[in-house]
Length: 250
Image (cartoon, rainbow, N blue to C red; front, side, top):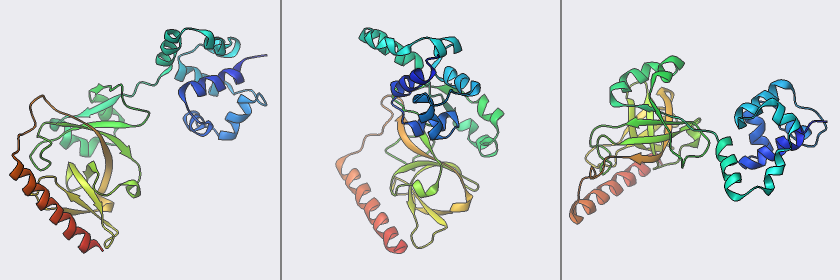
């Protein structure tokens, strides 16, 4: 008898996944994961191959080796196994020179594959992309900063006043704070942190991609220095703009 069911359960818990999350990764029903773990059914070959690919195991080890025996291993051994089984989240980088082409190539796998990639160890599972921004509309975030964003699948998941990288048909790639317009359901308001730039609306149907900013990377000493009066003026202007926008939307 194989150890497939016991090993599947152990590997899932090693990653901290629920049965639902594991099922989504394997593209099967959650009930099947339960059946496999309880040994009421034997995983199909393609499912086992997918599991072995995720955890970098041979099919023979998955079927016949008792992977739970590593519980008695040292802390360093367990950490080494967890690291070996971890997904490497590759972040594709869209520099300024590629931003124009990104509007046309965002859906082309060959274009995306040509983008350079890097990794960040602090990121959890998800789909990420990095964009280089230019200009002073988001000061104090300086021009040349790289925004690492996590993919937002539905505009309904956008949180008001949070920062996002937005790809739209008319504006291309921009980095702004977003505000959902309660009065005009088909509009999204884009707001700059620099109050010298007026907020503006885009049609929701023109929005192609939205990436929630999770990290900002910038060169050392690139952030401009502000005195207290400048900062106070910027905060007051921004508060007035947000207040005015809320009144219009409500």
